[in-house]
Amino acid sequence: MSQRTRSAAVKWRRQAPIFAALGDETRLALIAKLSQGDRHSIADLTEGTRLTRQGVTKHLRVLQKARLVRSVKHGRESLFELDPAPLREVRDYADVVSESWDRALARLRAFVEEDG
Amino acid sequence: MSQRTRSAAVKWRRQAPIFAALGDETRLALIAKLSQGDRHSIADLTEGTRLTRQGVTKHLRVLQKARLVRSVKHGRESLFELDPAPLREVRDYADVVSESWDRALARLRAFVEEDG
DNA sequence: CATATATGCCACCTCCTGGTTGCATATTAA
DNA sequence: TTAATATGCAACCAGGAGGTGGCATATATG
View 1 (tube, rainbow over the protein chains, first blue to last red):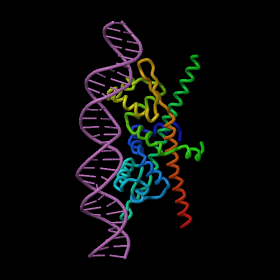
View 2: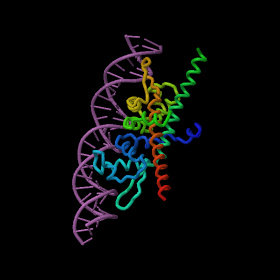
View 3: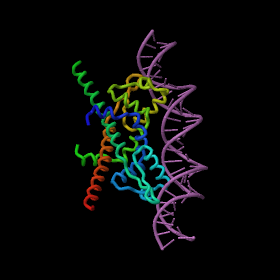
View 4: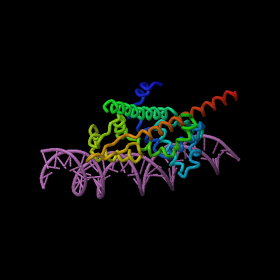
């Protein structure tokens, strides 16, 4: 993917809710477990945390609203799985901004050298 | 940078405060302005927003605590500049997690094909 | 059917966040 | 020195976030 394409693809204002959803250790832990590839029920995801099932459920709803996870009902349990698309957007955003800064710095350096 | 090196470099729990700091449109706007490479005073960064100077200052403190920006006092004004390091960590984290999911999916696909 | 399991929904609580105003302090300019 | 500019600091406020418990509902299981 070219730099220009990435730049155009990343609408930075839309990233805010995704970042907000990722800004919690509990939710990062859930994502870490889900990134292994298996689907997990809520009861399953609650194990290992010190929260109640309702607490974990709230976190999952936050992740779901940011489209970082999907849930599929399977019998009496609802299974959650990761959606990697928003994470790729996040990666591209961070890449574009940090590289933009790097290029700005390079321009500055060139200007100083030319001036001095 | 190899995949293994990135994986080891990213301590996902440490990413939470960075993501939290990025999870606000106002702060993303500040980062967008600062990513152009120039230093900006608080009064300067306040222009264009609908917030008061103190409101913007609070946002800058949040970004500073997450080490996303630095401030240097210059006379009576304090100039803020971007620190791209945390953004690179974010990029690597997002890259590792999404690719981990991709690999998990590839394994699953291989298993299904082998089984069927 | 009766019971156990998995979840959904709601009320409630506390603390943090985002935002404001007011005032104090430091620095530049006339 | 006096005035204007740029910032720092503290109090205050409304609303949302994170967490809990209680109870209802749906689905397996014996």
